[in-house]
Length: 358
Image 1 (tube, rainbow, N blue to C red):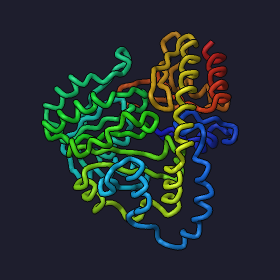
Image 2: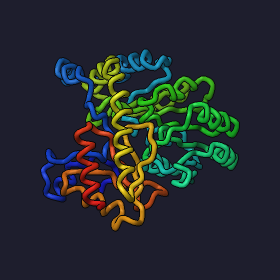
Image 3: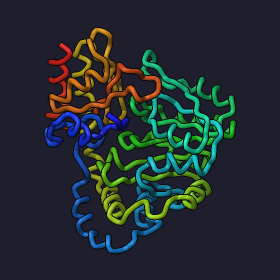
Image 4: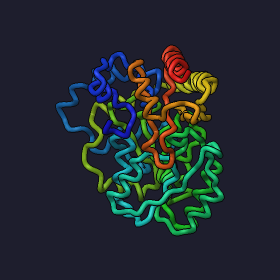
């Protein structure tokens, strides 16, 4: 496989000769309830807008995000998924030296290196359940970094760093004049832990947000950045025009209004995550870590006769696709990541793993 991301089900289908409709995709962590029910109608109603250029400033979407988060609209910039800003921000900020808390999403490093930034790592470890030692991290910032990347909840570990501990890191980053990028792509599941409202207390804070995971819109590419108005304006000046098309803008606005869907998602994912984690931990040789997101990181110990790539390949003929985490810095070839899906699908995964591992 050429891709390092999850969700490459069509490529897997071509390579293995399996009908994509038969596959259950656990490799991409998308809301198991799908997109909000009003999104499809919103797109159909707005379809004739494809005859015109989209609103360059995504005004309606930004206003909706402002109301949703209680953040000044001047502090929000919409884009084609949060990944867009992982490439745009380094080009604007031009950091010489970066520190990434790992394991982490590989696009941080790619975006930084394209801007000529030297990248270093602050690793977390399985023996400590991937806990971020904030004392050590704050000490490390004294070495003189221009920018820090921290994902919360972390991808792929699912580990949540409580907001007060993130604030400690932000305070140290201010002291050391380090821009701090907090990727909150999965924070919607624990919104109360977001640091989105800290942008005025910490002028070097940039928060990345995505509508892919929680709102189930990966194919539409909707994301945004929250930060001090000066940083947002600097990125806006260098952003490629029309990165958020007209249908995406309408769909995203509609999704943000559905409070019932939002509450249902949080309750459903929390319950299914605990079921899946408990069931996986009953399989000898597998350890599923605690998570605050809609996925679980699973360790494959040495008693099992194959590594992450081997287990992934064994599951594909069963119609199951999981994420091999070997591409994540510092993890190696003994980890997979599985999305939390609907109960019947989660049971299919558990039963398949029980057969294969035994």
